[in-house]
Image (cartoon, rainbow, N blue to C red):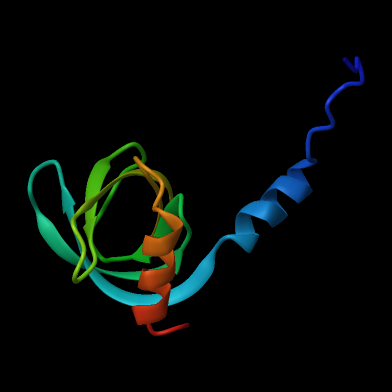
Length: 110
């Protein structure tokens, strides 16, 4: 058994790996919050672990939301970050790679 320390990726390497899994998309979808308000959003970036979307509706970090992409069941997520009208959300359960590929294939690439 080796006692060599495990090399962790640098923050730059971790960010690069995370971005490698992201795909630009143009998806019209719906988002619902806990108050059951449903509103239109534009998903502009998607990964198996989350999405980036724009909307005029106001969301706050840690808000629990449900993303509905046409043809799919609602996907639970949590707002992780906000920047103006853009919201980064993390899925409660990562997308299965086959589902991710299907959504990418049906989207209009940005």
